[in-house]
Image 1 (cartoon, rainbow over the protein chains, first blue to last red):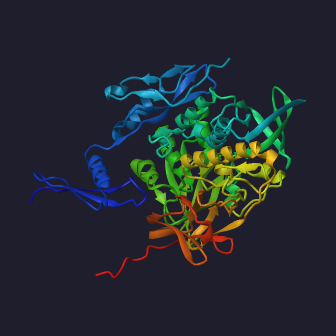
Image 2: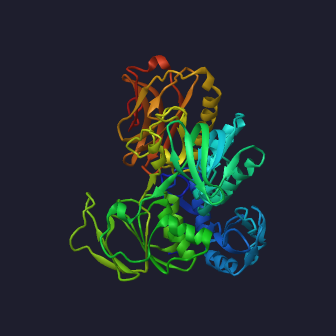
Image 3: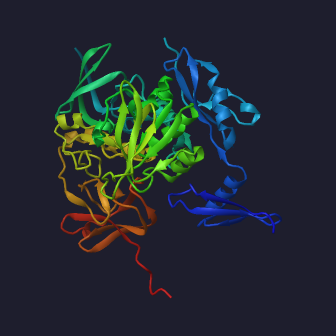
Length: 125
Length: 427
């Protein structure tokens, strides 16, 4: 018998929360069952092949009105790299003032993803 | 004593206050925002996760980005914002007493007021959890502010009570910051927050979710050392023999929010059973010229709807000021009644109904259901209906519709959620 891989995925596209089953058999296309719409099928395929998540964290700020600034990635990065990414940016301190949208870490961990500031932080007068 | 005069005073500079202020100012009246924090933006500033703005901006933003977009718009207006300023009194004549560090006491005379104070977290006391009164017990939103704004990490080993969105989002956030989240404990048989958060905040990090469970004891001398959790029956009573001890140094409570209406009450504003002011379709409270929007009116789950509601309040506050000379208009008082499977409806009254008025009704189902229709009904006939494949209490339903005034009977309309009628005979 050929080897079969099965994954169970809860769809997050809408509140219905369809339970989707993805089955992979060597030599045949992915079998996706349980989704009730096209977006759900696409989500399940992406989630099966390469799950991605946005990086959402804070970075330290020197001389600002707050001790930390919220930052995010400009697109999703591989889910299993999120911990490395949080750890990496936590060691970098930024200097106020900072404007929303500023790239604070370009090409994060060579993943082709930039980290950008989520807000303005003023300098303490 | 400093005295300030304005047309529209907005109490609170969060998403609702910002949207109301901008909309009022666009109508050419003078606007003053009073904000007790040192900066504008409100709770959005600590909600650093994404998922905001999909409806209003048609793109996915983080909370701080959503706030910043509105804050940036203030620059081109004559809106005055007093931050670090706490309103301590509001009178029915719309005079306001506030305090701040630089001016001391400030007296504000305004023609109209928008209440935009938001809500407060329910804490341990709200659900009466027995046990020791030790350090390490926080409302989840407070812990969120510590971590996301002030740069403090309040926990190493955590149990979270309540699976609302804030609870689940904090489970992920604390995990990413190096804490061990041992459990999220939920009294309901399903996760209270969005499915998206259950999957991406809990399942992604293998954080156990205990459904039909509650914390029955908090243990600790100086600092929390652990909690006892127990399974509950359908009346939320702990079941004998189901106790389980979980070690932790921190307990977070994410058990709901309460609209913050002490000031509203001082002004004589009538409150509804949900804790927010009773309003009409203009977001106007029982006190003419005092409007309410955002979480102070009803606890929202999406900020986009807060913005839209607050724009309505801000616009109507400006119209009120402009029409003051014309004298008061008659209120029609069409009562809006929550019907089948509807917990509450905002507004509670419709006062100015014409064939062209679009009215927004916001409501929540009492219980989850599938394949239903949200209906607006009066005197036995359905005036508006919309199909919903799935409804849950944590997702507010918004219906924006015109109503034919002649179809409204007995000055009453009912909003209800009923099974989707079957079309014709099913083969």
